[in-house]
Length: 145
Image (cartoon, rainbow, N blue to C red; front, side, top):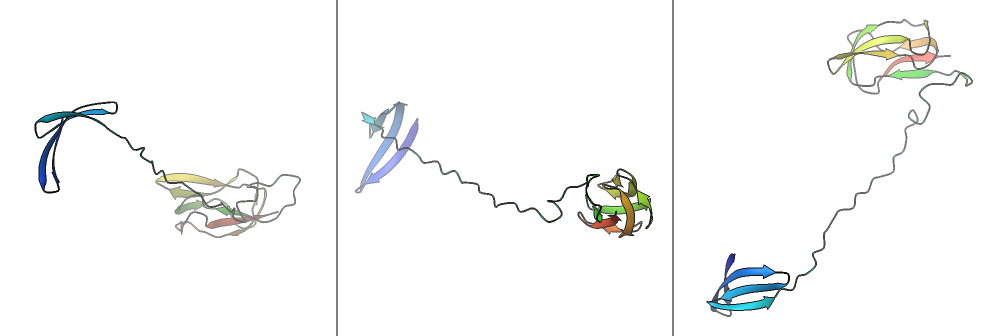
């Protein structure tokens, strides 16, 4: 099975492990066969503990994405969902929009994405124009009630 060479106190030993069953090993040391008991130590498995820091929502993330009809109408920001380039702006400042109206078209990851209004109101300001590059989370437009 396995062969080992040991030097113990200056003496050479050729050790062959012939067979191991359960906790008894049959070994040959310099031509003489012995049956020895193998003491198996329990190996501790060191598994790292994964800890995550507490997630604190940003001021934007903890607000609802759309307002309910009963809520007061405040300003809402339309943000870029992905990094990309603005291809077309479909609205202008002062336009009245409804939930789901397409405000602009943005190219991200080689796909055209319709950016839609998530609340009803008037376009207070447009922060981008066609050809602008935006990063994820950039404010594209502001809608007011």
